[in-house]
Image 1 (cartoon, rainbow, N blue to C red):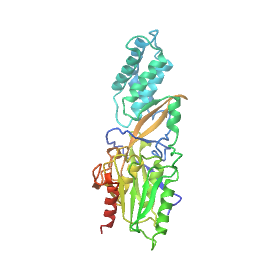
Image 2 (cartoon, rainbow, N blue to C red):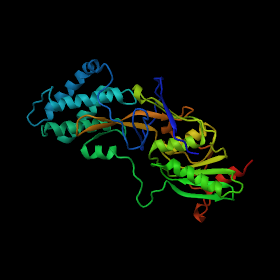
Image 3 (spheres, rainbow, N blue to C red):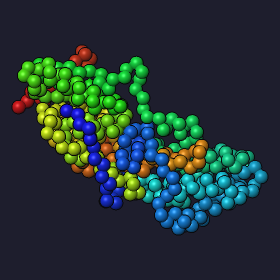
Length: 372
């Protein structure tokens, strides 16, 4: 069932931005053709769009206010407003104002920076310039949301690494079996390189075990799936549906994308139920939301995590970079992923039967597939 060309990514022309709360588990930007291709693998962007000089001029009073506060906290009380420390702060402020997913007030950002610097120095002239500016930038960027950060060398290396599976369990599938002879069950615990092929192969194997070679239904269990490589989540979605899978919106044009599943006459058409819970996040939420919006599957379980913001890595120097939230992901019907996915059939967090070892969520999913 797998095909060579899986997804088409198309830039979005719309400039609308919808606001929602920050997420605890974000989506990380990949290449410009796949802005949310992997969680933990980020796009490298240098500079800001045209008009940078005009913006820098508008921000100059705030930069000078910061430089004055820096001088008050510095060891020798002197600061060169054109020096490298102030220039670094000015670059961070400009990149943040331009790229952050929501409009931000530069004066509020500088207030946060000064507060962070004062906290380190205790309000006294007690710090070297580099340390004070670092503290200021950490506080300023951290005030945006819990996914944005100022990254030093070790953190940058970690941020660029693709998520790796646990060496003790390299499979994306924790379970693949048949129920009642004709209903397939797949427990998908992560998205990593080759996940879509694993799912496709497992379905073929289960179909081969069914006589005749057809399935009456499929339960796709995404409970506690925290995401991973989003490109693989898109590929899994593309196994079961055609059309829009997810789109992203940001204030900068390069952050607006559409990810589309391609038409395939061999797509499996068996009825589907997807199991989710409060720990279902990121790519797993995108997959569940796409299947739900296309009415390809019924969603059973509890409201999901809500992890649908996009983070982008913005290098500043060879040693430091910004990771800031630059876009939000939306389901095909326009629901913000970071609002979570609401099940079609909501169940209690701890359904009856758990104490006895019965999986009440799975039992309900199987009952849904038995219903004509």
